[in-house]
Length: 281
Ligand code: AMP
Image 1 (cartoon, rainbow, N blue to C red):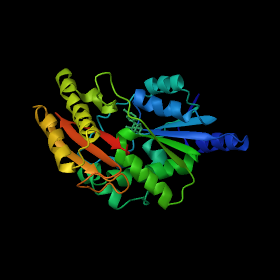
Image 2: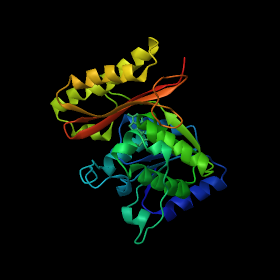
Image 3: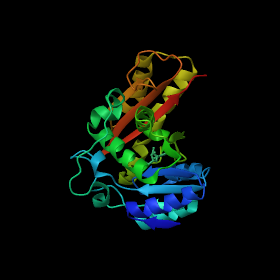
């Protein structure tokens, strides 16, 4: 496994692989890797070669968000990548990605108006821009994204279709701790007490799953019962709990064939997300 910091090195390596007729899978990350990331890297193993990017993208953080405190440890990340079968790590500096006079952005309407897009106004512009750049640099055949970031997955799929990017986007299941908490680099912010309180997210998701399995289709009913779960925890403060269309990410009042039930909750100062994809019976 090779670790490179420049765009030129990635291009040279991938060019050689393509010359040899090899397929390339790509997993974009912000680093501080855990089992969730590793599951994507393993899934990407269906390609001949696997590229992982580790880039804490400043453009997708708001001015009051946690860019400065976000955990970083490249040595630890290298081990995790090696363990899971990556061939190349691209770990650029911000200057390599954005240079001195960066002026171009990729943005999206509709799908970014609800959920995290509402709470984090410039977030998806940062995500779309960096993912487009990474796709242009790596030129993968397939790219792997976690369903944990459900809106991000929907946005990337839309972007690839809208802009005719010749890349297959593959959504991978949410990996959880034994007690249900979705794995996240941000879980490292939690104190022992907060870690326990954070279980309200997966409990609320489970509640939604049970209600839908029992035939409940009214979004207000699902949201109200999920809110009751979150509100019972004094350390938790709801950012949003919503039921949206999988295609448009717009709120729906009644679930028909499919839906995304998503929530974001502050546990102390840490904002965590979780969701349930309902894709029909
Ligand atoms: P991040 O480093 O947080 O930007 O995440 C990089 C990729 O890993 C994204 O596609 C995430 O959706 C995915 N990911 C993060 N946590 C999990 C998880 N618990 N299960 C599955 N995928 C995840």
